[in-house]
Every structure is written in structure tokens, then in C-alpha cells.
Length: 226
Image (cartoon, rainbow, N blue to C red; front, top):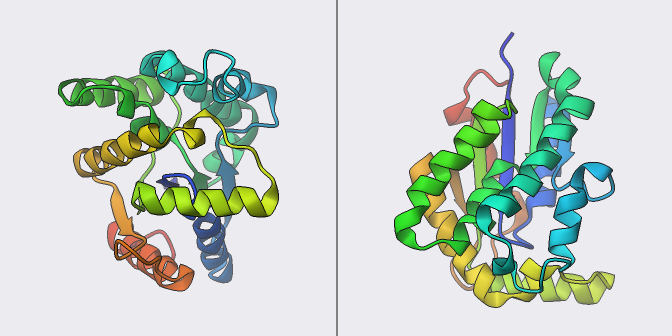
């Protein structure tokens, strides 16, 4: 039985949740069994380390925790979630659609390293999560590309509208800029499906982004049922 896992990733406020839901809707309309998951799990004890890190328990600067330690917090969350929650659905053949995945470490944690260390980190990350921990490797990663200036603008509006507080990543514009560069590097090196969500100044419509995502997935995974 062929198993599929699709990850949707991008900077904060890039539309990950919206596009994950629209992708799920597309599978549902075609009667393709699916399961949506999201990381970090936040409300479960799987993500205790992540919650301490993002709330600033180790320091308000993301760089206070080195990228290997921070990546391990997120990897542990994914491992626990996989083993105790969605492994049965994955093994049963449901398409798994993940709002963030290992790719998030390749964005936010890689950003802490100098360029000459980036390749080494990605090699370690992929070996650590997929080979040593044994969580599934995604068949496609959708990277929603949004310049950090637009990401911050949308993030501020979301916080104003909802009253949500920013975590240590969201508060730090320097971190977001470095994460943007890290994402472009990772996308190129790892073969992610890069979706430009703006023309540099204006955000594309949700519908046009969704249409491109579906077309690109069909090209990469023609047997997935879309």
C-alpha cells in the first residue's frame, strides 16, 4: 500500500493553516481518505520542550537555544504524535497533511547557523528525524514563500484581531529574516515545492495559491488521487 505524507510550511502568517484546510477539502471532494495534523501539538504533553522554548523559559532570544537542542524539542513532539496518534491512519493509507513538519526545523533552526554550516545541519536533521527516530519522510513539502516584511504585517494584524501573544520567534524580526533566507536555501537543496504567495508587495488570493498547490502536487505525485 502506498502511503503519502504532504507537509505545508512557511513563515508565520503565510497561510499554512488555510492552505492545509483547502488541500484537505480537495481530497475530501475526490473521496480520498485523509488526515490533517499540525505541529507543534501545543495542547499535548508531547510538546513540553517546545512550549518552554517558545515561551522564553530558556531566554527571549531564539539563539539562546542552539539549533540542535531546539530541533530535538520539535522532533520529540513529532515522534510522540506519530507513535501515539496518527501512525494508525498513515499505515491504513490515509493521506497525511501536516501543517508544519520537519521542514520547520529546516527554516527556524537552520536560521541560527552560518551559511557554511547549513548543509551539515540539514544532513543531520534528515538523518535524525527520518532514519534514527523513524518518523515518515514527507513525499512533498509545500513551502509558502512570503517575504518577512509581509509576514510581520500579517502577523501583527492577526495578533490585533485575535489578541494572541507572539512567541519568541514571532517577536524577533531578525530571526524571521534569517528564517526566510534559511527557507530559500532549504527549499532549493531539498527540492520543496516553492509557492510564491505574493508579487513582493501584494498577497495573492487564497484561491490562486490553492490552485497552484494542487497542480504542483499532481505533477509530483500523479497517483495521489487529486
